[in-house]
Image (cartoon, rainbow, N blue to C red; front, side, top):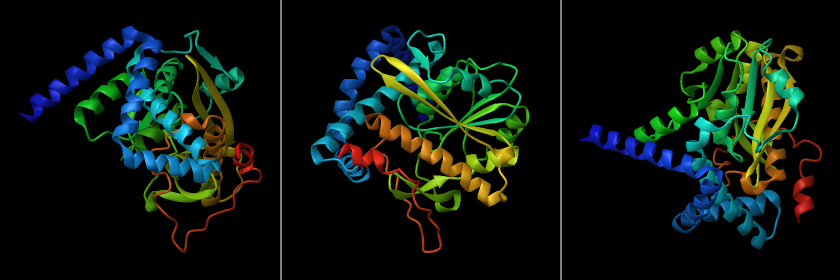
Length: 314
């Protein structure tokens, strides 16, 4: 019975995906407005969490915090629906603009291993479609957290891998990731979610200590990889691909632990810059600061100017 129900759910997901692709970006945007409103109404706990986090982390008024949080629900609904668009989305789409084509060429040259850090920001699901345009002779891997819903997990991962990206669950994936990096592949990670203490290094994020996943940084240092931050920011029905080179780990001269912290801090600060640029497009309903540092956890000060964005919005 369970197998039959999962199979039925999977068929429903794929049928809905086909319908969404027919509607295109405009159809997804309209449906996201409805779904975002329903989530806002039906999830009061997440609504309060998001409004409080926006108000405290950005230093804005209650009314502005409500506006940003409310829009973030719609933006995140749109991210979920955009999963269905991945099979037909690439850099050749006229709606895609690249901020630094030179860095994109460097990231995909295939002469160095690359770790790409991103976040639950903007059209993050569509990044898997863009990675499908990377040279096929080098691995391009997307590391994800698997959903507990088997049918939903099957749908999303088949969509994410539909243009050639290899999709790996984050548990027990280190060997496969290192193998891909050894072949000068590109491996992408979401680095903005709360994580367990034993997997974390505590760093300032939006003015408060946050448990940052140190796994991508450790793998980058071990592979002597180039580290980039990549984000797909929405601009109406267009998409802006932001890319920034954060570090060449082969050039870092600290110890293993110090280099890991340098890389983790670099991608955490990159996420913060994007959140401050377009706060409505981040995943505020997530309890980002749930894991708290203990008395023995050293937390460095925020980088100079990190609070400037918050002050400017007051």
